[in-house]
Amino acid sequence: MSNERVTENLVRDQLRDLDYYSTDNDIRVEEQKSEIQAVKRLLKDASKTGKGGKGSPEFIISSAKTPDFLVIFECKANVKDHESPNRDEPIKYAVDGVLHYASKLSKEYNVIAVAVSGQTKTSLKVSTFIHTKGAEHHKDLHTKGGTPIKEVIPWDDYIEHGTFDQAVQKIRFEELMAFSRNLHEFMRDHAKLTESEKPLLVSGTLIALYNNAFAKSYDVYEPEELQRQWLHYITEEINKAKIPHSKIMNMTQPYSSIAVHPELGKATKAYPKGVLHELIKMLNEKVWPFISVYHDFDVVGQFYGEFLKYTGGDKKALGIVLTPRHIAELFTLIANLKKDSKVLDFCCGTGGFLVTSMNAMMKLAITDADKRKIKEHGLVGVEQQPNMYALAASNMILRGDGKANLHQGSCFDPAITKELKKHKCDVGMINPPYSQSDQDLHELVFVRDMLNCLVKGGVGIAIIPMSCAISSHPMREELLKNHTLEAVMSMPEELFYPVGVVTCIMVFTSGIPHETSNRKTWFGNWKDDGFVKTKHKGRINLNDDWAHIRDRWIEQFRNREVHVGESVMKHVTHEDEWCAEAYLETDYSDISPEDFEKEIKKYMIFKLMEGVE
Image 1 (cartoon, rainbow, N blue to C red):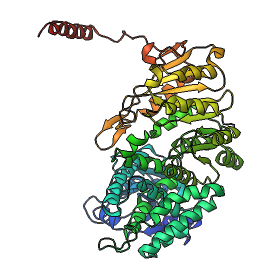
Image 2 (spheres, one colour; image 1 turned 60 degrees about the vertical axis):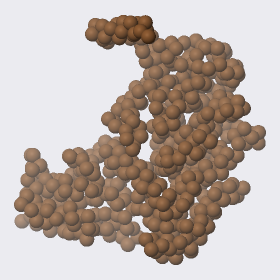
Image 3 (tube, one colour; image 1 turned 180 degrees about the vertical axis):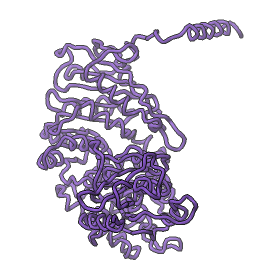
Image 4 (cartoon, helix red, strand yellow; image 1 turned 45 degrees about the horizontal axis):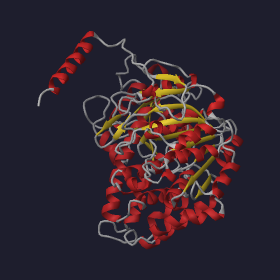
């Protein structure tokens, strides 16, 4: 006779074999009930009878490193009781039951729900679902390759597949941004940190937490000692990363001032372990799980961008306009990166282009040797500001890259440009400082010098103000004298909201004069990226349109497609305008008679009003 306890034992044995019960990790396996307060509250009225009362799945699994996820199991002895046709009989069927509990727990968690039935290891039937936080419905959980998961797998694999669900990513990103606002206010009110110190504290803490010893011990230090240990572990991780000795001082120096900040080492009534302890605790709980999973995400840069929203100082003084994440991704597709590409970011800031490029190239890596080559030789950056250099270097360290070729200094320094040329980069990306009154620091000067550092035939991509494309400037002639203008794309007008700058993307082939190429330039109207400006969140992919729009843009660009009102091919010189708007034809096919009549009426009213004093 079938026995449900046998099924539970089989699941328990598999969990034990997969190290769920190991003392070397922080995975917590609870059976039949949970001591987690939020879980207890959510299951208080979760009886499968639907008449109220407590209910609980057979196994509830959690981890402090991924606090927004739960993995739950519901077992049935007989495979005939695996799933009902409508999944609406939670008492009798495993799938129905686990989805019932997932619906309760998903109010506050992303829930991976696993239904198991059978009496032997070989006969076990397993179905796996995900119910994302706040969602109305569950869905099947697949691997990143799209395969349904039909076996019990390690915790890290559940989390990896679960976190690459688009709904989970969207929720996590929104929660991260909400946390960044709270963190800014906490730093302002309690830590008294300057705007430039805030992102350094975030990046330094993440580096320190990268060290397991610090992550486990920071809770025991007295406030003043914690400051010293914080800097000690940052320095230790930087040294471990094997950054050249000449660069270590450049990277550690910005963190030194924070390590002696008087407010951070004080014990207060509200925070008896000190403000720094509270900040580390917040970042450990809210941010570290995020960065440990999303290796392609520039967390440090995102926090820096969020903090800049609260002050006009840095933006206006330094012309800093951080590249949105989806535009950095777009750059990698425009460049059509390969695993052997060498990418140069001439003004790398927090390293957003390098982080995104690394992720794109790592997806193409086949062997460990490929991955090492990408990390050690495929990414080159320059940043002048010491604080920003430290942020960029920390970004690369957090991705296990100890040998990123980051140079601290001016990208116009002959010694640095000489070093850059030695790397023989074939892809260049740049978002230079904007609004510089000094013509020696005009955006096109940055573009020229970046292109000059690439190998002949390399791809150089720049996002710069539209004025560079339509206003006369001697640098335009010099650029075409030495390089080919392949494409110019007009970008959304509020792309960098709240900074009011209209931009375009220019794509060049380095080292081949435009006249020698003797071909037309492709102009694209990329004004609508599907992002919507919203209150408190800025521009977001509200309707999930971006992926479709991105793929269409890239297909048109790569094939040099011409579409009325969208794109055009045109021979241009340095004297012409370099923007789609100057050459696009208007598509009148979708204008109705009513639209035409409305515009005529508006024009007539305008003409009549002209004569009215």
